[in-house]
Amino acid sequence: MRRLVLFGFGAIVALAAALLIALNLYVQSEGAQAWIEAELSERVGTALHIRGTGVTPWGGLTLSGITIPQRSTLTGVDFLQAKSFHLHLRLLPLFSHRLVITSIALIDPTVVWPQNAEGKWRLPSAAPQPLTPPPAQMPSIASSPAEAVSPTPPQERYVSPAGKPRRMKSALAVEIRRLNISGGNFQFLDRTGLPLATFENLKFSSTLSDAHTLRGSAKVAKISLRNRFFVAGFHSPVRFEQNVLELPKISGQIGSGELNAKFKLDVQSAGSPFSVSANLRNVHADQIVAEAGGAKNLLQGKLDAALEAAGKTADPNALTGHGQISLRDGQLQQYSLLVALGQILQIDELSQLHLDQAWATYHLTPGRVNIDELVLRSPNIRLSATGTLGFDSELRMDSQLAISDQIRGRLFKPLRDNFQPIDEPGYSAIAFNVAGTIDRPSTNLLDRMVGRELKDFVRGLFGSKKSKKKKAPENEPAEVALPTAAPSVPADVTSPAATSTPSP
Image (tube, rainbow, N blue to C red; front, side, top):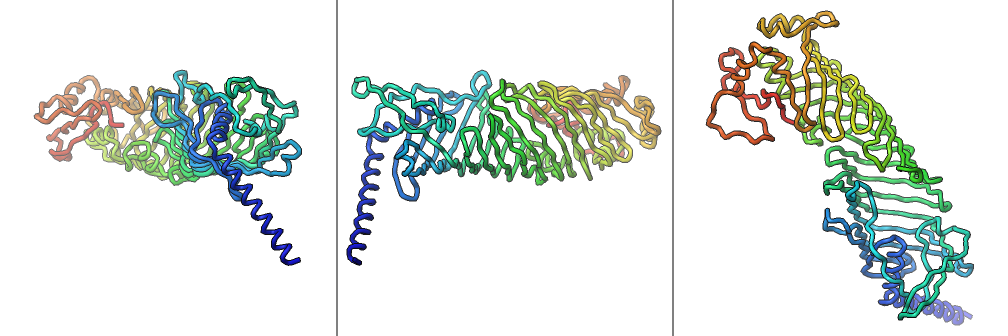
């Protein structure tokens, strides 16, 4: 009996090994691999290539070296490259004409997705390869859970092997239980080919209870928006039900501060409307300014912010909502225009503003951010503004610089007369404008401060002296010598932004 048991067990193992070898030889054959490529290409609607196939008891069906060619002229890299694709299925349901896939895993995918000329996101289209079946007929794979659980009869289609029409039936209903992505990297490009958003090291795991319901979670190591705004440690549960995608509890870090948000997207309605609610806490102002390309020490302090917005993914300008930003323990220092003015007016406080208050409220309308009120206040100075920031970077601000009577009393009389009393007791102010773009702003503050009588004189001190130095490029502020006659200003002090256009 012992020998019979051992012999039977050995026979089963040998048979299983033989079946596994035969199955691998089959799926690795040229015909079977070509059929899998053609079937997947038809399902995704574009050409898809695989380098190799294999079957193991622990890994299931594995497709390696998956690529989808790029059809855009903006980039030369493939639309999709993936290390491997794993599919696990149950064998017993096959006898009842059901293909139950227990899990699908996509390993290390890299996606580069550019917008088309109309600014829309579309999968690369290509005519699918003709469906030529492998030597033995294989079951068709449903392209989506909706197809998988559909109670309708199997669909019929025609293929033409060897030039003879032949009818094939997709006889199996496909059910998918789990979907996982690991090591994913996604890059979205705008219509000019510049990075719009980048997702690094995406991990996604989910369960599908039916064709219209998904539950799971997503983690992203780093998200970059326009290479200027960064989110680290992104994490959120994911729900998809009745064509609505929800990320109900987003958490992450922005500028070493806390991000908490929620997001909702209706993929079925026209334009794919979405809504977002976000709160930021203890964000390091110097870090996000430096990440956005500004000087690291320009602005310091801790930022708190809130945003409520809604829009449509099909129309980036159709964004509406409102929000607010506040800065605690703030300092604005070495802002070149204010430094220059401080040296002229003998106001040291302008060179480094220790902000008692710093906050802004705004609302969003299609194509622009409307600044309802912006206030920066130090013990003796207040800067305030209202205006608009366009999504195209256009900048229009009506601003006011107010100083205390203590500082006003120290000014040279022609300058002092330009500051007029305002409703706030003990303060006088001048109005000025800020225009241009966010990257290259311009202002008439200097002209408004010195007045018409001293305008040419001050401009002469700042810009009319001839110098043998090479002229700076237009995108860089020229060095301007400050007046040496002022006893408190050293002769070698220069101010890059004493002109009307401060540096970005």
